[in-house]
Amino acid sequence: MAAAHHPEESARAAAHGACRALGGSFAAVSVWERQLGRLRVLVNVGDLAEGEQEYPDDESYPVHEFPEIVGFLHERWAGGGEPEAWVETADGPHEEGSYCHQRVAALRRRGRGSCVVAPIVLHGRAWGELYVARPRGAPVFARDDADFATVLAAVAAAGIAQTERLAEARRLAFTDALTGLANRRAVDMRLDEALERHRAEGTVVSLMICDLNGLKRVNDTQGHAAGDRLLERFGSVLSLCGAILPGALAARLGGDEFCLLAVGPPAGDVERVASELCRRAGALDLGEGVAVGVASTGDPVGEVRSARRLFRLADAAQYRAKEARSRGPVVAGRDGGEDDPVVRMADAPDRGPVAPHGERRRFRR
Image (cartoon, rainbow, N blue to C red; front, side, top):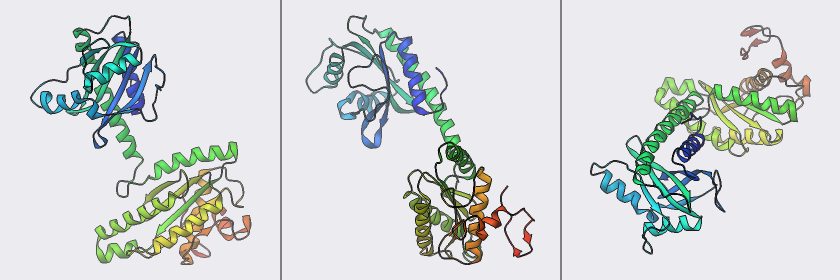
């Protein structure tokens, strides 16, 4: 079956492939959500009945309505059996309240004559099920079809496993291991996309750079484990404040430096969140607060054509906040627009780590 990059794509490819291979008119892939005790449909393909959606918002079925799953897992399979598929028909035997009644009733209601159901087993555990149906009037599925469906479910499981591994690799590639926030790579990608929207549509893009105060003192006096706790706690505070801004990305850039990227909210909203962040960070029992600099295309900072300039503006504002030991954020452009000392500092040519007015940070390139 075709390779996919997301679980939904992998499930869709598996459903389409099984539907064609088994001569079905409809197929679905569902995942077993153990903690919720339900089967949730990921994708439906083929001839959809009334009310069915290709990617359902919330089509799910309580597992207690499907005792064959529990019986299969806790009895036959646990006793050394294999994950074999089975066949149900619209004209098959059923009793009120039984599993057969539920499945047969669904077949009849949707105009289908038979179905084959195959457990999808991943890493030795039941992951979900592959379901393929034929319409009334078509030949019903036979034992050979069920055997083939068992093989197809194993192929689907391999594809889903690969997709999950790739998804986990992507997650790790864009996640800071200590705090669970995004990392610099994720920020760079999101910022490039955001500035394209800014250039095309005028979307406001704001960047908040945060330098956590006191980390070195904590590391030196209480050990690096305490320093890590401080970083984790501030990361949680940043994430909490970032949630106030719809779609904001909270990230750790490295060391004691964090950022928040907001796309869409007005610059004033971002400044208010920055003030709240400073207040909450100052209340942490470790550390000495945070120096926060904000740069936004919604403020009078001049044209922002590149991610590099927005980073430099936010960097310069953060440097000014740290230098002044400010308890609140410093916002680029708020003190004179393009003549703001922060804007002039950001746009000045690099002169290395030391400039005539004293020590200054070397801005990112």
